[in-house]
Amino acid sequence: QVQLVESGGGLVQPGGSLRLSCVASGTIFSINTMGWYRQAPGKQRELVAAIISGGSKNYADSVKGRFTVSRDNAKNTVYLQMNSLKPEDAAVYYCNADVRLTTGFLYNYWGQGTQVTVSS
Image 1: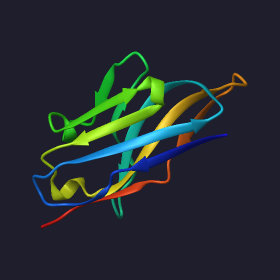
Image 2: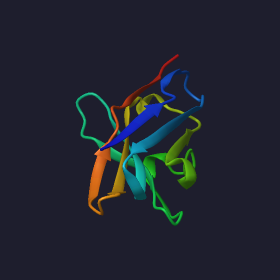
Image 3: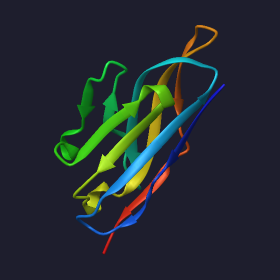
C-alpha cells in the first residue's frame, strides 16, 4: 500500500505565498507522475500542476507564472510553491501520484487533501 500525505496548507492573504508538500510512502518501486489538483466548493477537481520523473512539468493556465511544482525523487516528495495567491486559488489541494509498486503493478493514488484559504 501507498500513502500520500500533504502538508503546508493554511490561510494566507491575497498576494501571499504558501508551499505545499506531499510525501509518498509505502511499497514504492518508482513514481512516474506526481501532481497537484484542487477542488473548490461547487466546482470540479482540476489539475493545477504535474511533474514527471524526468522533470517535465505541466501547469494549468490559471497558475502559470505564479506556481512552481518540483520534486525530490530520493524523498518521494512533490512540492508546490504558490506565489501571488488570489482568492480564486482557494480550494482543497490534493496530491496525486502514479506509483509503480514493488510488486510491479502501477496504481494511481490520492492524498487526503489540504485546505488553502486566500482571504484578507
